[in-house]
Length: 319
Image (tube, rainbow, N blue to C red; front, side):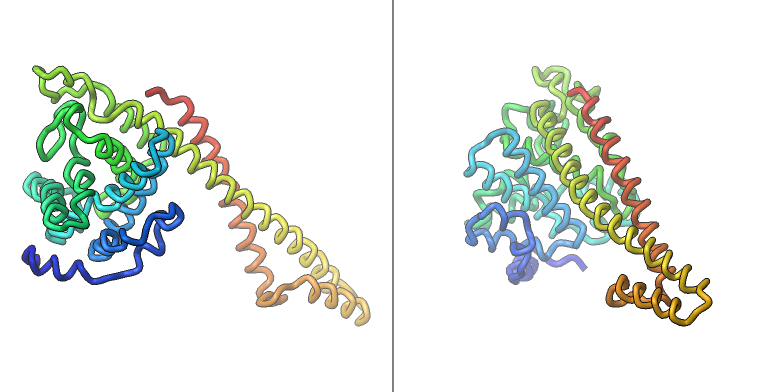
């Protein structure tokens, strides 16, 4: 059952160690923000992970935009708290394993104002209310909750909007599968263009929903992220290649041992086999281990090929 606002306020003041697992720790933010981040432990696991991802993307966007360290820290905290209002959305709506009805969508949209009210009521959250309240506003006035236009939307909220949209598109939800990175970026780029449902009498009607400059930086952030994933995958592939080389030698010695006629030859090959086997490996399970390594190698090589293609496709995109 959905808890009343006051009851939920008591619930969300329980402490947790979320801060210790987040990107904020590596950014050396003061521990005074533990209180703000502790609230996130009351969210469902998907929303909590989404908040962390959006905060990481926001932090990287701020770096690409060459914003000050202080503003970057502020934006990152706002991003962590941007969906805090979902604490007050019924789980039947928040975790529905199908697309929301129009009525349910209207309930979901209330997370912006509910998050704002939570922040305003708490002196420690009040400075970061912009992320919760404005992250669904669009430059052309088609967003919510107020339908603001570019000049009235805080810059931090414009950054968080782009980060939020990207993470929502590329990650699987209860009611949808994820889409490819390039396809997600195409949608976000499309949202920098004039919208057919934008107010006609506004000078921002041709502004699009997303800030073009921020979207340009998003492409750079995503490429950096993919390049890092490529680097990690290459290291893993190199380790697999070493294992496969060792397994080939073991396979050769096993075949020679099995075809040997003399006991001294059998013992000789067995000795070399034992020298090459690692703890947990044996002749009995060798075939399965070797097959698993071959499968892992093929999988990672395919992943690398796809990642290289993804970067190539992203670099072709125009904002």
